[in-house]
Length: 377
Image (tube, rainbow, N blue to C red):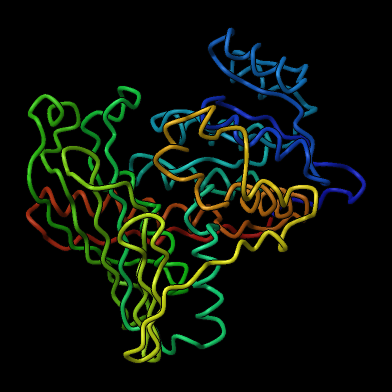
């Protein structure tokens, strides 16, 4: 574990990747315990445009050059999926705290390498999983903690999204290789990690899409066995050629009450108490944040007039962005593991990798590795 940072010194963060990543710039700039010290983007035109817009003087077109800058305490990685593991490892080995967008890696072996690098470096690692900081998730987490749902009996999650028009590396991606938005809420509510998964593929996608990753399925559905628990969880994931409005959803079924996600955006979710059903308006939870960043649960860089595909399809990720920044900044400054630390991130990511492996084997059970915990130096 790293040493805490002085309460008088802000955490100096470099943001890497300025597509979706630009959404986080004003949050870091406004956070009372952070400073946005630098930005990094291979496209120099984009790099300078964003730097000028937000008044950021230190700019890097090369990630390796950023890592040797001793004035930077932490990096927040928002680059394409294939780069996540190598960049996170390099940053940890350079002595930086790391926040990384999902998923942690694209193989179980690389998940283990990131866990090992986090342990060896003593720095904080956090996978920035938006789904466990949305207002809907925080609302249900509060219901569970208050005992209003009773004993959890079953969990279900889904992430259905049409990825046509996204960058080329998405084309034909196995659905479960990007499953953490559906997996994370379920395992967090269960309070446990996954240990085994059984998955079946369904339907088919265009052969040209399937060829890139050798993944033929339109939909993959997994049943997750949870360690030290009698509760099971189900996850459904699709990326191409499945007609459905975008949804990142979860349902929770308890002995006293249950929560079900809305079927159509804007309908509001339903809470069941016995056989009584009520549509509920979910509160915002901005009061949990420092006052300076509370407004970012409702607005950010991207909106209807300045659109990004992640905003259009994901509805701004449920107000999660400032919560993620606050947890990362706080955990790094306090020298403690983050709420989504390396072991947790590896488990959630590996659920999807193991699930796709199961689907390709016709539904055979596949174990999710037990990643060794990050321990204090």
